[in-house]
Amino acid sequence: MFPELTILRHLIQTLTVRWQALRAEPEAGYSTEAVIVTALLAALALTAVGIIVAKVVSAAGNISTGP
Image (cartoon, rainbow, N blue to C red; front, side, top):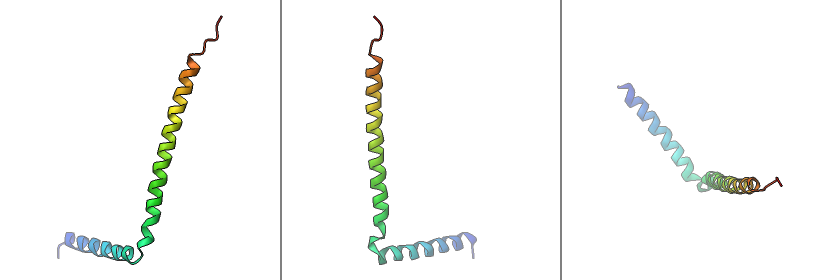
């Protein structure tokens, strides 16, 4: 038999087993969903902090210290 077909057959068998495991326990995907939501919230928080820092630095640059 062709070695490529052996690799493909093994890949399909592995995916089938994993798919069956996920279908057996539907709550298994919750942790992935929570990780994605947490990553999005962290990205939004970093964006907000970046905007605030830029505005503070800009305002600090406009302060005159000379007579």
